[in-house]
Image 1 (cartoon, rainbow, N blue to C red):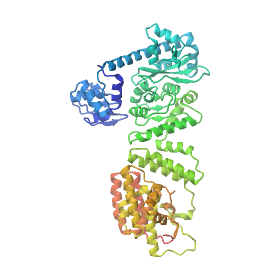
Image 2: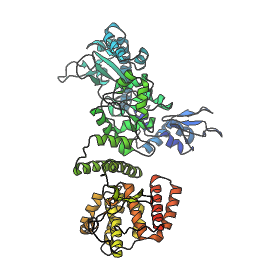
Image 3: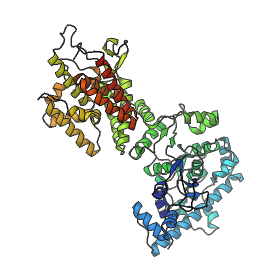
Image 4: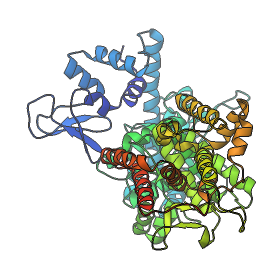
Length: 613
């Protein structure tokens, strides 16, 4: 028995071709695709290219898909190669049976029925009876070439399609299975689902018709209607326009996700041939996987209204668990009241290209979408919004990426919500400029005496702990240094509890949040110690130790206090930071290096902190 086409499609979809071939061939990025030296002939200059669903060598002509590659490289026959890939993909290979053979024949028959219906709809569009539908499409700015390329058509009055296909020997029972007829509740004669509508054929990724969508002419409801789920058609896995977008994406076109049929068609006609759309539902995880097979960074471009913004948030929420450093999203922000179709018709393709070019990365776009719906007038509202941002980051399963998202979202939040401060609060560097370490501690009262040396040392140790209670995400970068500091008996148990909590959370892949840490201290009997650390007396906490300080400010403040406690260790810490930065020159290692260097410079100049802690 031949294996069902649906099974083979699922197998190929679950087998990333670049990863499969990368086991045997050293591949390098080439635009959106991959290239390397061909494994089937000797060559010094790479001519072997790997695309989302096939490979091709421009030197020897070798060509195929995942199954073909396994067959050619491992000497297996077709069935053996399928069995091997299915085991890796977690799929069960359909076994020969009379029922399976009958089901596959039925699917083939349904495909033929839908192809015949598509031809009938398209033919009728250009007959006098389809004049109203054709005028509608031309009024939307579509050329005849575009209309024919998308196979658009017209469904006449009820009974016409059944009669026409009946003359070709197609029984009503097959039309019901294909989703063209619907059985009424009384079980009487089935009726046609689509009538007096503009018809949009829906194709699978190979270009075969698997269902239809129809738009009502006039004021009837529903305006748009999709075919039902069938043996060929599953809404959650299908994207409108995918068959045409695949070829465009291979040629370098951006992959754009719009809301509906007309948006996709208008984008293609306007030169954006990588456009696709879900079918009347929110984007699903299966559709996201399909998009990432086309591009590592598809662009969501939904309508600029409340429903469009909500659709963008829902789509991003679906994508979050699947994000990885090599696959993400962008979200294009359309002008208020516009959709892609209207924007291109009214202002041209250049206007849409500007929208596309301005599409921000997902973290920025997501913050903006969430912020637009979140009032921040009260402390409770700000706390709720911050909790939502942290919940967004936690949903990302790649822990390293989750940490980056959390820091990016919270840094943006704190930079927007932080209170303006008086100039006198800022810790100034030599020359009168604000220090990168942030503000100095503020005295409880203008007439208060300076702290004794013993009070100053104790206060610095408290500040180190206070910063970490409010910003526990910093623990991973300072754990070793904090452990090497001698703490007074009242503070040492808190340090042990904090580090144990952070380690436990890390093993569980959970975020390090201040509320969770403080709750843990209460659970282990250290709530009073935590309260003492965060108290406003005998000296108030400096602003870099407060919960609304940005992450970079809190981290710089921690190193500043550490430098005041251990002058002699700064050189060693700076050398270690320089090595880290040389190996991984990212923002975090750079920030740590700059904070340490400035702390050492201030100490060399004899600066003290005797006006505070």
